[in-house]
Length: 282
Image (cartoon, rainbow, N blue to C red; front, side):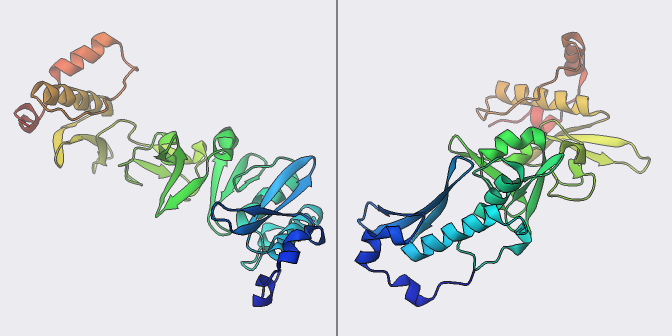
């Protein structure tokens, strides 16, 4: 698994034409006319691409390492080295296929009651098996402490799958029960604020106070309320007031189905809204 030397880069036209000397290697041509080399293998009747390389020798080394990974049961992810001809993601996929009989195009390794998504050898996310289908077809990207997937051309924060809002504050709006921010199993997530525009504050007596805010050109406080439900309804009422006052900005109202319409209307009518919202003019 040593790195390739500069001599490995000096392949000839003869190398390209006689690829039978490099098992598992196939040449291809880019739109620019540049020749490159693809490596692949077949395991359990599945054809697996191992990647693209600049020389046939590099591609062949990747092929040989792929064969070794699926045949040597002593090899684990701990044996990966940065000098490997195969990408770490491919190590994860091949070892999972070898050990668990399922091949994923994303770096997933299955456990007994959960699965691991490897962003790197040391950066590992944990998920429930219920999420396996989604993440087997969506590549996770990382920016700081935020994780995203590309879906229909958009970047979607994966936290939204678990009821965590984009503006949510860890430890305030939600928390990881075991203290591990990479463990996205639902049993490990505790969501404190499930509604748009709501933040909770714990008082000295242990009770919570719920503040409703709405972002117009900066954050406006709608009011502070004794229950999360009241704050959520106040947020909806603030949207209606702002739109009635001529504000064209679109807001997502809170969906509330835990109380009957008559009770919702009663709270909506009685709930107090900040004069700054009542008198706001765009």
